[in-house]
Length: 89
Length: 409
Ligand SMILES: Cc1cc2nc3c(=O)[nH]c(=O)nc-3n(C[C@H](O)[C@H](O)[C@H](O)COP(=O)(O)OP(=O)(O)OC[C@H]3O[C@@H](n4cnc5c(N)ncnc54)[C@H](O)[C@@H]3O)c2cc1C
Image (cartoon, rainbow over all chains, first blue to last red; front, side):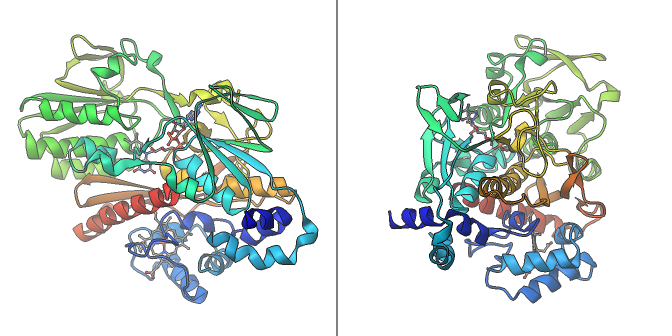
């Protein structure tokens, strides 16, 4: 009840806080933020600079991958950095 | 309540923006609808999910059930997890919309500010002479998972060694482009290991298909003499079926099968027709930025039912669209601009246990449709070592765990 009331007080602000940069929300389809036993690791709590560097390395073919090289090529450096900053939260 | 906890400082800081919590109804508790409902809930919206059935059976990994590689119980999910997350789940069939209210079969009315529908597909039993819903009790489609999946598995099990299994595959578009070829691979695996004198004949109404080179290379290596693939140009288009005789007809001749799996042509789920969100193609045109129907404002269509351009009809895509659509709906309700989205898709297929392949894509709106981002996506390499195939089979399983946890909790 209390949570509902709070949400009621300030709905738009709450929504703003959630906005993910383009592409970022779909990463969670594989990188679960809640599973801890996953083979595809959670990215929550990582250093965003490390995630951005991994994306750069996948994009440039410098890091071995079964799949991430193909996905990382869909994002520029700036886009990857924005995703990295969001996905580690 | 993770999201609420995180948003708390913002909440307390902004009482001046007070406004009633908007209501969104989501119809369809499959991969698209559940993902969207959860994401909407995360945006602080009051969500009601309407789903006809109390238990959902996943199509992803149902081909493994058909081949006896996993029990169907691992594909079943309930809606308790969504309820625990604070989503109101109503079991019933949506029969229409009156003004800003969804009407259910029992007369219940559910008010909404915006409506999201993810009704999946309806099989076009009328599109193949001789086939019908009744005929599917003898010649299963198994393209909506559940009893049909179990029926096909039982028929394969009961078949005498030396029998011919036939699969018929429709033209595009249909749910899960690589699905029929994954199924062909796993049925061939079943025959090779359990009934080695049997054969599988795949009759396809087209000449090209998803991950074709990878599938064909694997078939040549793993299933020579077992799996025979007949494309459209070779006489693969099935023009009719005879249920009593267990026979399929093509322009090039008839084929008799001990077990026949008919994958019929499809259209957007019935609800799309009722809500008038489907066009003459029988699928639903949408604005690729927001997934709002081009035909009915205020109604958003996601998942298999939508015309998503280059994005295939997959559970992965439905989940991705659910998240993006939720963000767009939240923005529209807030009166802020809708962000131009970027979406991903990945479809894994198993060609044998421990042998996985994938196709991936990255998509963005262009010219009113979702289009491929050039240079990104594509299939697994044609000449990868067995360790890569094994890793992909493993990741496929992991993805399934994650996506179903994400959808159903
Ligand atoms: C054999 C096979 C294998 C597959 N493998 C994969 C795979 O490996 N990976 C992948 O990504 N995808 C796969 N798919 C595709 C995937 O199953 C679909 O793309 C996905 O289910 C689409 O989700 P959806 O939400 O659009 O529809 P659905 O999941 O079909 O959900 C629709 C829901 O809406 C409900 N509903 C419909 N109308 C109403 C109404 N009027 N009122 C109330 N409820 C209603 C239905 O009961 C249903 O639960 C596979 C499909 C098949 C057939």
